[in-house]
Length: 502
Image (cartoon, rainbow, N blue to C red):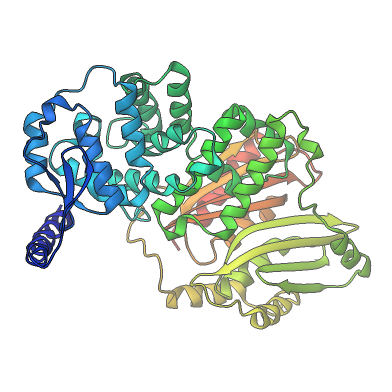
């Protein structure tokens, strides 16, 4: 890449400067037989023969990582010309050296990229040629596929003490997106590739299976935590079934955070981390033999909410990033609150809703789009006006949309999708809406449910880049599941209209 070439040029300048400094007493240091670090570069002594040292490539890269040194061009040339071919199945020493390099963390990225530019990295992973310098399909990824894999492995190395098998952790991180760039679903393709890579690395059948499962489920925890009600027993049971055992859960937990951090700033934050941690806690409890019903999380409605209900009056409370609204139950209340939050420039992450004694309890977790403080006083004024029927919500949202400088979508690359999930909950039908993010989107979607007489119990809002995945736990007005096909078709029609460009 251009960046690598530029780095190499500056490294040569540094090397020349270091050479002049060496006249004043700079000494080379030996770090392994025949390998020295001098002037910020890894060098060979004259008697080193790569042909007699099958793991010398990895040894050199690890020293470069540990000493934050560059691998000299002469060393790369000699390694390329004299290094022996790898056997069909790696030795334990080779695999351990490979893992040791990955466990060096972010300091390993530059040496690995240097090996890749010299054609040496592909000797270990021929599959790397497809992901090399490959752009991501989503704009919210800040790295190409190959660099994303290296960043994920580097991130996850910091979590090595959280798992029993740090070797499987870094290998799984390095390979979790190895299927990208090939025909078919990248996860399915990755699982197939790992079935070949694992045995080649000398991994056992079980260890290969673990890494395959890491690839298969690398999005599972984040998706479930942000799209499903983690207090629902069915969510815990289905997630545990997909994960399999506590060891795999440990590995996936660490991989989820490392992968998200490597994706970009929009992919990980305190809110998402808290949800994933809580989900992992619940799933681990179940996998260890506990009952999902025995885990007490944040009960809703809380005792405080019940006190507000007993007052029988409209109450608007704000604390940190949470808005609580208690008001007489009425059709469209959820949509009104969502509309006010959009007018106030807030993003909704989740919403919990309940009706107790004809009083609605609605709790929203929100944030500002640009990290500024939440203008609660303004939001409360607007919300009171909306509840009193004195706020033109549609017009206000349209006005804000005209001045909003944010995610632009000149054309829909992916059409909106509505999906129904009948397995996620025993008490509600989960409706997923995949669409391009727009000001007031949640408001328009909520109106679709109101229009068809459906009640929303819980809403989970996930926004990544310019795309949103909104999940709603929905029932008929009598509390039953939404199973009628004609009603589902009509709801789909209404939702697709709601998320279409204005």
